[in-house]
Image (cartoon, helix red, strand yellow):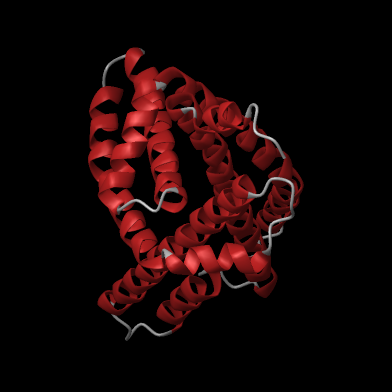
Length: 254
């Protein structure tokens, strides 16, 4: 992304014959490529995290095998892709509603937080229902909605605490590279260095973007792991499957 956009800007500056439409096309293709990369990354992050915690729940006394995680992912890959696409489509009306609510003074701010937290909980729990219970895509959305709406405040509070902890973790990780980049940019501007033409600046921005994307990937995976824990907690409170198994084992000889 960095080298591509910077290279396009440099080329347009050096060659006036290149029109704005070519630049717009390059930028548009770049954003489409980034959107595709985002979807693929989201599919991998959500799937691996959900597959891991599902395998762990089935055998909590044993270490989770990598082959088992990938095998479960590949079996449900078609449903996962459809789920992620619908997740993105549902984000559009959620964003519109959140924007409308945000217009309300003071109350709108907290309303936006509740909408965002509720959406994250719904998607995370619904995705776990897809992986763990092998439900259809629409059924998994319905199961996620039932569990989250039944334990709404627990789901909201859980995602709030999880999001806050991950935010603090992200800030701590980004402090050192952020300070280094800030110092470099400040001294470059003081010395009259053209950041668009500097190879060192290109390397710095590339490393910075790489760190940001890796951190985002890590946070996304941890978010789904957290919602996986939430799913099993809500599922057990609703259906009492583990409790029933223990009751059935009472009095059974080994």
